[in-house]
Image 1: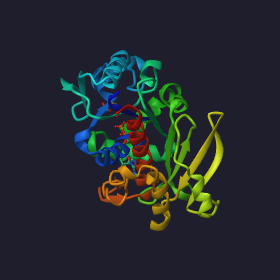
Image 2: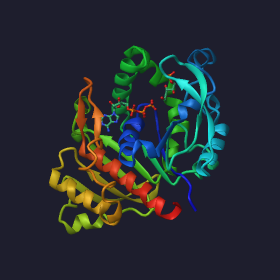
Image 3: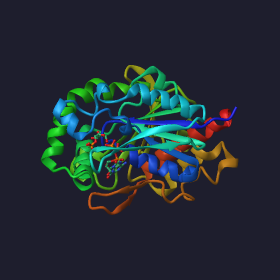
Image 4: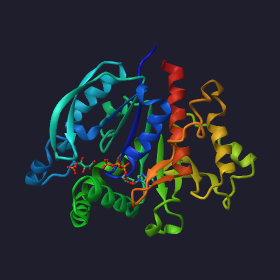
Length: 312
Ligand SMILES: Nc1ncnc2c1ncn2[C@@H]1O[C@H](COP(=O)(O)OP(=O)(O)OP(=O)(O)O)[C@@H](O)[C@H]1O
Ligand SMILES: O=C(CO)[C@H](O)[C@H](O)COP(=O)(O)O
């Protein structure tokens, strides 16, 4: 059976969904990937939300039923007529006709909030940076790209917190992988550059055999790459951590484990052959290369390629 492979990337505003998506789409080949942002399913424009007093995070502020219908259609390879919300103007634009490519990446705020939507994905990722980091990212992005002042963004974050708690963060439980980029030693003011990543790996999909890290002697607490067991939302999980200061040699070992069991896809599943992997915009607009981000993107790409072996 052949059908598109669907990846979900869910998380709060400015949690890093677009950044994660870009590298993955680049590796899979932009011509093979359809990216959908579920902000397009907002029910009200910016002005209406302010008048009603509702935030974009509330389920009632989004056409989740239509989003779910569209996801089911995309999963069976059918086209959709997708609404368009513009973050530049804060209003809606004419809908666009979209025919799904081989891979579909669906990123947004409420992608796992209904059972029907959850059933549409092959791989589900949830982004959970510490709230202090997310606030910095949101201030920077919304002041530079969406025309807000810093005070407006901070006030909006404060207003949104009850909805974040009630509607966004619980979706973490439905993900196969939880991704948290965090600064070493909680140095939030130094978030530019060398962030570590903590990957919670649920047993809901088969992950590469990272136990080999321990065989390499690199899985210990003091190493820049660590593997351990933990609980997440009370369920047992594996946890893989990669420090921003991991060396090229350590990163290459991890890449070898991720891509090692699909040799025929070596040219796709390869960090060095894909220079876009791990690229992120720094605070002053400069481009930073992050190994933890590159490896996270590679692991998610691995799962999408694995899924093609079952369905394509
Ligand atoms: N892994 C990362 N390392 C460093 N900075 C990051 C990372 N991910 C995101 N950022 C920063 O945070 C900002 C917001 O990220 P991004 O636009 O990817 O979030 P988003 O979840 O797509 O937001 P929204 O849903 O509100 O559109 C980016 O401009 C980027 O500078
Ligand atoms: O939480 C968000 C996800 O991107 C946005 O704030 C929401 O989509 C509304 O957009 P805008 O602030 O541009 O009106």
